[in-house]
Amino acid sequence: MAQNTVDAGAHGYFRPSTADRGFLVRQAAWAGRFARNKPLPAACGVGVIVLLLVAVFAEQIAPQAYDDFAPRDRLQGASSSHLMGTDDQGRDIFSRVVYGARVSIVVGFGTILLSQTLATLIGVSSGYFGGWIDTLGQRLVDTGQAFPGLVFIISLISIFGQGQTQIILALGLVLTFGSSRVIRGAAIAVRQNAFVEAAQATGAGHGRILLRHILPNVMPVIIVGATIQLGAAILVESSLSFLGYGVPPPFPSWGRMLNDARQWMINYPHMAMFPGLAIFLTVYAFNMLGDGLRDVLDPRLRGSR
Image (cartoon, rainbow, N blue to C red; front, side):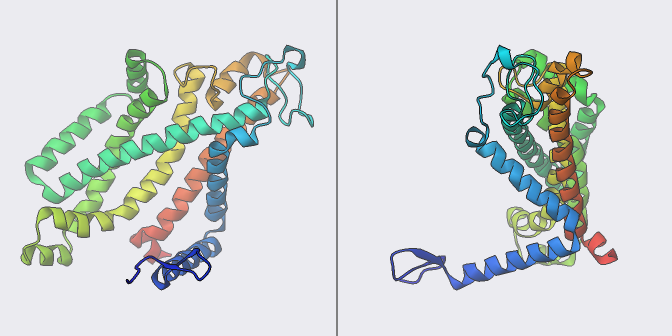
């Protein structure tokens, strides 16, 4: 029997088929070209991968639990036993920063998954069908953008309570509206191409045209927008945690760590320096990676370089 994806090895293990190996080679070649042409975004991409690994394996990386209290060790500076020092309750700051990465990653990726899914549905439908569907979708977007984003998020969290799920839902709705306009513009540009008219002339249905022609050509815009908005989502989550509307304690988040360090910042700056540095590096890495992907995936920018 022919095998499409894997071939059985002589010693009982599986190895990729020729088609899979060709795909992996092409992806590796693309990654190599991206690293040569965009070294800073590529380095930031490596940093994003490291952040993901830290979030997944936080229990194995952190030397202590995030809620281990040691009053005798409170307000210590960086040392071999506490790489980033301790806070006012004797908790290890390095361990709390590591666990805080999990909050940022879960909220960031959950928010982007929700916002880009809704934005794609609204934007692609509006751009492809036009007419009353476009009018209804854009009036919905106008209504959503009329609300101040931060006030809207805090209002929803105040009504439904604090937690990761509430933050993801509120923040995802806010980011949906702006993204849908960008995706709508890309869908309108793709709809005007000759291959869409040819598909319609051959009798292809709307579903086939959307899945085979519109969505694949809009996908680079979606990917770039998602990468850039990840940094914004993490920054907003940190701001909400700083204001007291983030993930409730005792689970740590970088914004709440900054809030806890306010009264100690002058004499013990390490309490605010390390979580603040984590926020800065994470947002910077996602922004630079998104900027590099935009230069590579956007045909207009790719042609102008």
